[in-house]
Length: 202
Image (cartoon, one colour):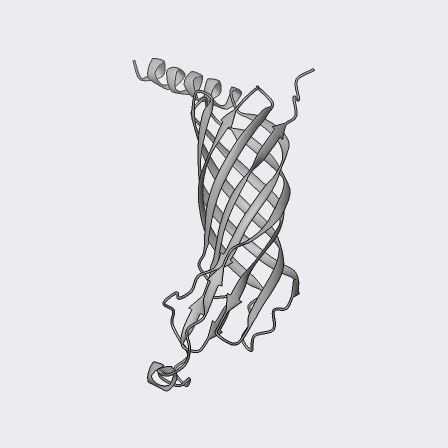
């Protein structure tokens, strides 16, 4: 009986691994990005307290529109689940406004993402992590500028055909990119675009 159980487990395991497939693809679309207006953070102990900035004007932020492009490889473990590593080029930024000035900051990131995809027939749900590396910027020169970000993302997609689909995602940065007065500001990003997977079967 034990031998039959062992053979059954080996057989099931073999069938499971036999179903694993790898499919490369490309993605691209529109970014709607900005910084949060305030985001609680841990400040340096030697900095001035928030009372020091009590009379300072708060900064308002607005969205800017830009684009993203990238490549991915979908590792499909089953009909219901896949892991999708990605590398993306993402143009983001924000508009920061006070009563005296308005500045549009443009940021370009290389993003390394690991996305869990859960399939419900033609629909797929996304949840994952992102490491973003700042590679260029314009009108962005705060005294404590960050060049990296760590984000969490959620989203959904729909397969129009076996190779082509549409997607939408939301990503929230976890590391403050700048600080104005007593406020930290992190990245907010909405994406809407398309993806195409290449058929590897001959």
